[in-house]
Image (cartoon, rainbow, N blue to C red; front, side, top):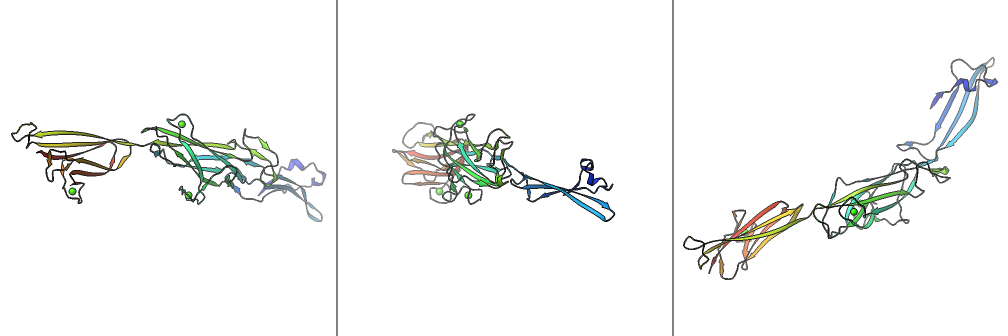
Length: 337
Ligand SMILES: [Ca+2]
Ligand SMILES: [Ca+2]
Ligand SMILES: [Ca+2]
């Protein structure tokens, strides 16, 4: 980089009284290290030396100033961000649910960071219990149990180069008392090990490359929220019966036909997995062959491709995964003996 210096600043020096009018005083800046997004790397020496040239009867003469050498200090900065796209669903009492975060060294020197997770944060409905903090040591963005490394403060504090980011997972257990739709917050905090505090706070000689370490605008500590939301589906069964007697009435006499209906309603949020409805044929009645229906559609008694079957004196209907907000109705008929 070259720039034209201010001629007036040095023109009073006697040796320079014949300075050419064409602006021949050159100041040079030598930047030895690459510049990252966070600025020139700590420890870089910025050397600055001026030159001047002038003409004499014997030809051009050049002189140089002394060199001013400045060492770039280390700025301590860190950024923490939730890496989940939204609230992470969980169910009551579930263990080791995972929240994801990124920790970025937004300073200009290599730095180690301490990590801490807090599940006792207000402004939510329950407190997740933190079980571990895990570093994404295979750098695939996914928590890999037994592969990614469990974080131990003071033992494997992550060391990040300027601009470098590490993914961090916080594992938590959800209280059994949490209910559908409730939220629980977990904070992850990262702090530079060199020190933190008011921006401008200086730690003499502790910067990378021998300069000072100076707390930057982030205060050298940062926190972000991750959130769990309870997504829990529950099922309710309501059973009813209607009777048709042999005479066209509704009396319950031998020969009357009872139609049992079982309404399975799934509420809350999310879905229930592999929901099955069963009913044992009551004593004093006889099951009517192939009388099972699901939402009014006939099913066979055989254990075949449809959802229903009759065996061992009971009907069974497999509803599969049923989303909250859904009601499925199973019906079948028996005759009073
Ligand atoms: Ca809380
Ligand atoms: Ca991983
Ligand atoms: Ca069937």
